[in-house]
Image 1 (cartoon, rainbow, N blue to C red):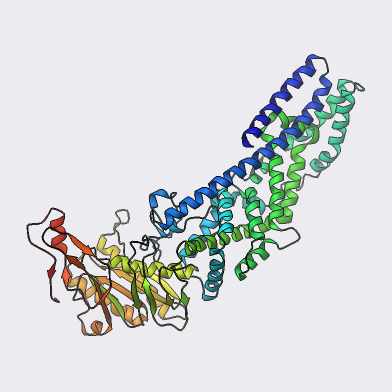
Image 2: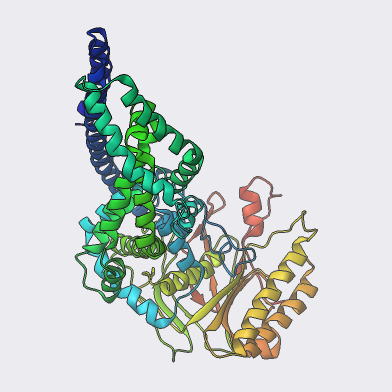
Length: 593
């Protein structure tokens, strides 16, 4: 069908040119105008059919791609997935960098099935900040329902990806036009001319074609139309350009909005989305379809062969712009709200795909009265299922902390990241990689990936201190006000100084966190960190370790969480395995410092 329409467009164009030449050569130049008018109508119809066929073909290709990518996501074959979108990351965000929310092999990469700019923006905003308990419950209900609606989610994904390539910045230009004043206000004379001149021009053309009037009778009305249009030509073109949102703009959201307005879903969230799209006398899908037709009509400007006759005879641009302004007055102020609905629906579909792809994951329970985080069989969401080792994790209550020790590469950082990522996912309304997860409302604050900054003149140690200050400030602010508490996750804090000073500084930080009422987990190689009497009473020690074969074997890790403090190190053995050793064996058994 696509190739047929392509050939038909060419046939119409060539036939129009040949017909015009033939009529002129036969001395029937008056009939050229009628030929051009008929050809213009035929060309518009063929172009519309061609675009519809292209969209059907592209939609089928995208649905196939989406399902292939779904398999790659389940297997965590990151290189086989499209590059994740690059969201704007707030400077010094509580956890976005530390918990691998963005970039390659990230949470955005895993959930990145959103095809529209509003969808990507909404999903990212949900991951950056926890929702309130009531909103979380509504999202969970909608996610569970959408998880089972496989065909419906595939259709949403395909329609959304047809708009791929746009950005919120692109859409903002169109939204500004939607919310701007009428560009034809004060040009009453132009509107009047657009009503009066076309019948005169058309009558002159018909009479001239029939040989009933001289050439002057045709030329004078067309000249008058040109004089009327000339002063307003630039203004009309500018206004039409502002309204024209391009091939990936709002005009193409009609099919997606129609899917959402007719969603076969019964959750309260889905019902609210439908209501927001159907508010007013004209629902969103109908209005966007009208907008698309008007913008398609405005595109005649791109084909001078058809545009110039239309502009001179019918004052085409004035009529199209007037229709666009009427549309804007009627529905322009509602477009931003419609795009918000698209964003929320796509974000829900992304979380629902995550739930459908991982049937062994659970929906967390958010309990305001809870004092601890409990996650039986909790794993890291970004690890492939066959590689993900799950552990029973409990963090809290306030006044205690989970002290995670272990040798190098044993999985300490992965464990605390797993805790943080699951809380972030759960408080966004999505499923979690756990058998169950019960948490109080929490603000997650982390210090895991600390980096220095040459540009800001900040050393590695100072960067670590600044990050810890941010964690402590957040915990103390939460402790002094009603609302969610803080979950802090600290990985090998203050590595950039000597052991004695690091130990003193870390203990000082922990004491302030205890007093704030926050809960959290701390990983460390310093097995004497909690030796101070007050910290020892508050620490809940757990560890991860390795197993060692004979002299020719390497180290193996089972990533299982065990109670108590670690009793071995493996730095020397890893040094030897890397070819940098001096022959001494490791790991070694050690005592507390």
